Length: 471
Image: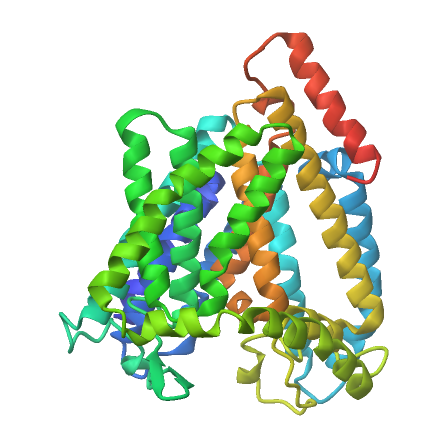
């Protein structure tokens, strides 16, 4: 089985080297098959979780070689982001020196940490050049939803117990049996074909969110197909047993409503809520099938109040403890990066799990402030592009609004826990969503209700003005 995965990785890497724009679609496939293959492999080697990395590397290298002005075109369009990225690189030098000098092999921690932070931004710039037409964006989102819409079916198969001895379902093959303990009952964490409930939950939530975007922009019977897929994903999301993943969807809806409201397109916000009625109904019907005494449903209904507590405890209160323990410059780049525990070198023990505390303990105060500035510049740029496209009624406007809302939901989740970024595909796909949204300001992707040359020039000029103001 490992040779099958190796062969797929080698083939997909070569295909990406030949046509770099196919790389994202190929990574989507690898992300769906890597965990089932790993579960069928003796000793379930951990390197298999990195299957998408060679394809991603080929995507970045070939996009850089074959795209004119790869960095400068992005820099000219979004000067604030590029400026903050350069400042961040300088501010991270102390953190890199600290982790590289702990012991003989601690430089590996520095490389792991540098890769984990850079992957999102490398994916962002590559995705900025990805599209040649808005229809390419729809096809890419549809491909992701279909591939992982099939993969999340493992949640239903595992929960139903229809195939109890199938090694690709659940965590037994990996030597785990994850449960959540609560007063009087336990909740089994369902992972399906994926390696953990977190990964299943993230993909189920993302399929649900992006399927709603495709339904909103679709027509006729195809719209119903995407709504059914969103409903299917919503049920798998409830089964995963991970509250932080379930809350991605309501945060996405709130963010989308706010985005449309700010653009003066309130009717589109209400239409999105109406479209969500089918996935919501599917969860209600699934609840009847699971029975009111289902521990899965009981967990969500009885512990929903803990979400804000987790946000306060892990997202913000942990910052003070981290500063007291690790000081102004932190413990060094890569010391708290998910997966770095596999590197057997001398280094300080860290406990930080949330995204905010991880950044502070690794980058220290200078790096944390630098990364915060990058994220503010990125958020403002995304908001500016989406607002301009919605107001100009461009073809990609609703895709941009949906992807931006999805990005916002993920940032909120990462404040509570950053462990999901241990998956290279998920980290890169978040960058892809942001880069695709930013690319909607490119001149060749403009067009809408009024397609005159003057209209297109006005939209591009407005986007650049926003960029000049800090976007």
